[in-house]
Image (cartoon, rainbow, N blue to C red; front, top):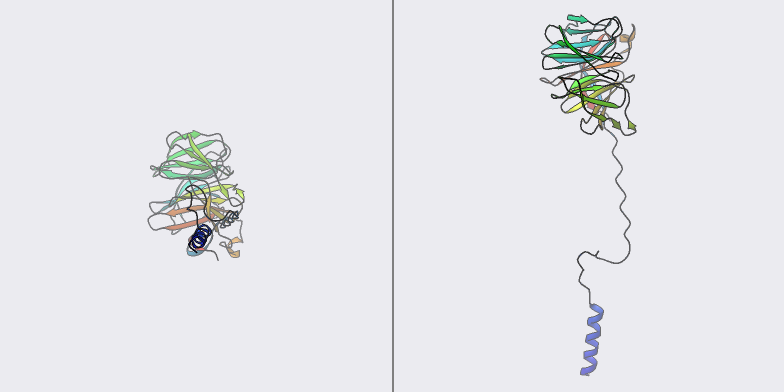
Length: 275
């Protein structure tokens, strides 16, 4: 009886043995676990708008650049023979002062940096620089691409040329210091036009659309879209108008302004997530 009991005990212990896990080896059974499916990418957020205030705008201004500074709206206008840089009273729409550029230049985007106004030209490869207060010319720079939109991040100028590329430029020399490719869910985002740097993001009008892209300046990724469809009412279109183009921001009061080429109005808007 003792021998049989001993054999039974040994057999039971062997059947009940669970091996210790070996470091570095997977635990559990030998069946292969299927890989978990990746989470689908979230679509880029879209914002619409609520109009807070409406201001008069010169309907003969072919708006190419817009900046708000020191309670004044600074504007760059285009077309050969009609290109200007100007100071505008936002509340009345009246032009306070302006300077025309030679008729062989087609004015484009503007930016204000260190009390100087920088104004691009479309296909002339020339950037004009003016005194912010007097609009007197100071100097000019040359560049090899087309000129469309212009803004700055407090250190560098940021420029568009109608492609999907944004260029960073030294304000003192206008030399290129870097560039990014702007991409959305469907790939490169082309026709980048008027620019504004707002709270760490680049806002860019997409030419010939009612959309503005919000862009991460480090990666070039579009972080959100702003859909401004319908902001210009039918009665505002009775006379000649062109496309949306013009973004300005009042950092002190967080006010966002938009307008367009030959538009009769400037709109102060609040962004609202689109449902």
